[in-house]
Image 1 (cartoon, one colour):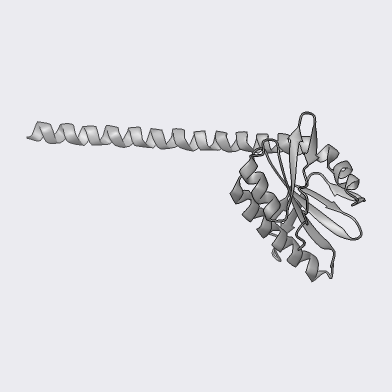
Image 2 (image 1 turned 90 degrees about the vertical axis):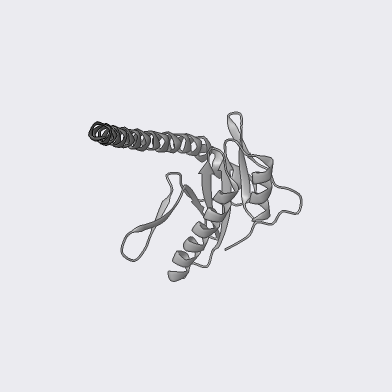
Length: 176
């Protein structure tokens, strides 16, 4: 019995060590996946940013300013509360673009929250310009694209070496 007890304790120690090693490998895998996801996002942003002003200007917006590296929105303490990937503005409106390699429905809800925060920030400085949203994707599923348009966002889709803004008949962008 003593021998069995000793073996069980030894096995428990070995199992605990294997579990710790597995946890470390999982943490490292998660870190690497995070880096890879960020890289895909950066690639998607670089594909969208160069031509986005031209595409929106073709729709009559005539943007004077674009922040292709985005805009960070901070709280009163300077802590980052959200980020906008591409920020376009002119004298009458702002368009905040969220860029995803493959947009998902949950990205729409997150972008709505970003626009609400942006509206609050702009209102505090008496900026009454309309704020519109857009979601850009390298790979855009039909369901996600339809949900994007239903939410009042422009859906920007990568096509070859350029992008297109597919505007369904009767589409009216939602303003914040």
